[in-house]
Amino acid sequence: MPATITPAVAPPRTRGLFRQLEHRGQIVSNLTPNWFASIMGTGIVANAAATLPLQFPGLRPAATIVWALASVLLVALSTATVMHWVRYRATARGHRLNPVMAHFYGAPPMALLTVGAGTLLLGRDVLGTPLAVGIDWVLWTIGTVLGLVSAIAVPYLTFTRHDTAPDSAFGGWLMPVVPPMVSASTGALLLPFLPAGQARQNMLWGCYAMFGLSLLASIVIITLIWSRLAQHKIGPAGMVPTLWIVLGPLGQSITAANLLGGNAHLAVDQGTSHALFVFGLVYGVPTLGFALMWAALASAITLRTIRQGLPFSLTWWSFTFPVGTCVTGLNGLALHTGLVALQVLAVVFYIGLVGAWITVAVRTFHGSVIRGTLLAPPRPLP
Image (tube, rainbow, N blue to C red; front, side):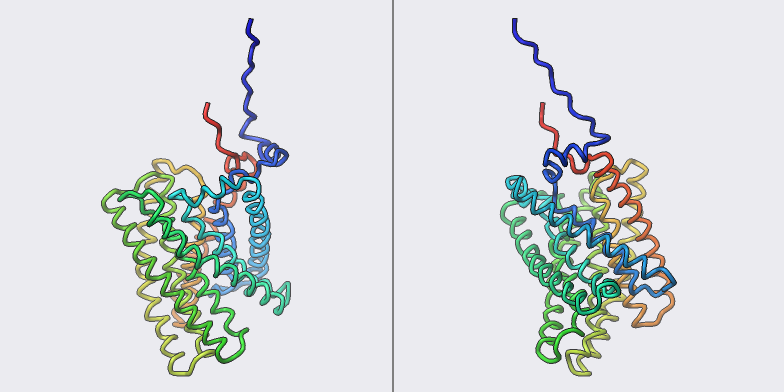
């Protein structure tokens, strides 16, 4: 008589999975690069508050706490990523060939750059200016190098290896080309800490070069996304949040143009610096108009999808960082124009950003730590 084989019962996925995976060394088995979007979304909440037109008691200390949280997340997630590559090298290498996941390799460099900028804007209150500047330089350098690599390598893979269709374009395609724009805006913050002369000039014009690289690539991709929406409609509900990523290069380019224009006088002559300052306004205000239009479209599509059912996933972090870049862009325009309307708009966008961040952070904590579903390895096929 054959022995009876009792099928193994899978452990419940609703509670205790986090501890079970940790003990088995599997907590990093399903770690993907899009997890770094959580650091981007957390860091931008802090950075946007640092220059918000409306400052009130308690805002800066609260923003500093959020920056510290983003810093801890960066260290923890970077360590986990190294462990993932060591223990699950085949899985990690496979992400680059995934036509969706590969684009999120732009998230790690932007996470580094965002935390670095927060260290300079807020961390100096805790660490002191010399240490804060040193940390920012390290994070900016690593983030910029990785960002330039992602801006070239991921499109190369898309052109040569990935299987794409006419309806494949989505907001995530912007992720690998936006990091140089983040480098441009955060690099502007480091201009005052460089020696006068060639060092500052190289930094300034290098940032403008990265501004152009990212802007032109983003325009091409946004056109493809618009074409896909017009011809193939919205698509799966789970991908709808990625429509908000379009606000990322728009808001970040406004931020970069105004930060670089505002600090250009440190590196170039008066006439050139004035022209760059004016460029920040002439570019920023029209681009803001398109960003507001896209925000309205994305809001309408998102609300429509919510009524039909919008499942939670890590793509919900698309509601945070792109909106945050609009806040920082509005902060710069409000500072340089003195327009009360822009100040009010910046505060309104920031309130929306904080609300979105709280919602997504709570859902992510519940899905990863409490239930464990976001970090659980894929179930094997029967």
